[in-house]
Image: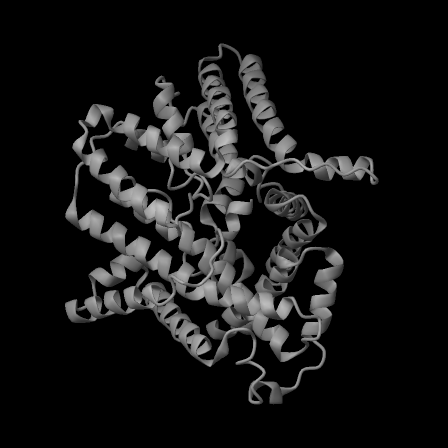
Length: 466
């Protein structure tokens, strides 16, 4: 059951209505049932795996917290990590590992939906119990809801136990203002996915599927893909946080205008925030962070981004994608004194950072390393400015009307991101501080653009593949 599907649009109102009718002490049970139903609609055969992971980490958290000695505490933590990560490694990486050992052998293992996300979320609970930052949850059903909470289970945000578990036991009441904010977050997410992503998907598929394109069309496709992946993943996150907000749950903000970052380090403070902070808190800092000298800091950065790349997928492309970001971070740190002396204008830093990030998307998107190199070569050869005016651009699969439509949508996105950045607020807060007639005009415009886009073929959200 995808967020951008009719079944979800029928399921969610029923879930919400009954949720606020049911007495408080039973609300979490209803939400747990809805979460497992949602997951079963997506991946019914692997629901038992979700249960197994839940039992393992719930038990590990209790054992770790109540362990009498440091040795037993470390043992239980290691056992919980090994058992849970073994499930992830088998389903996500066994084909890759077998291929490394036996190049002539190929095996195909079906990857359960959301396994990377709920595994990391469960492991963070074990670590929080180990650090005694949270008390272990005695009610396994409440813990199961934390792991399987349906707005977040397929593609995050990767929630923290210290934020989520206390909310499960709190009373939850209907609130018109909160519901309005949640609905707008969902509307904005659907706008990004249905209006922008659906059209840019056509453009990028057309260009990257034709080896004859070089120069300007390839540059346009690269820019389009950078916007597409941002709108796709941020769109999912907005729908997820909006749905959670309607249900009176506050989950982590996952994006904060990432393409307005002034450095690569700043980009990762804005992009997929729940994952980047997870790696910071549970890997980078335990490795020593930046406390043990410059060389150790750089080694830790390489380890973190290499694992981040592999987390996204067991291919050379994803590893290179992660290592490129590590190199960017190291070089950025090394030349910081020079940048400070040069006092580069902010717009230049934003543009430079955006170009660096775009280059990494080549490896993220391509099916193989050879394909990525070929696409890079075609991007920087045969560049002719005349291609901007001879009809080549309007012929990249969209046609004039759809091209104009998506350009208008992108301008709206840019305006909203710029205003949110300037005011330091989220998108629903921006609407709350806007004049009523402008606010409702925006609502109607976005809703109308969505209606004109529902007939376009839109696949699942990109990050559901991870």
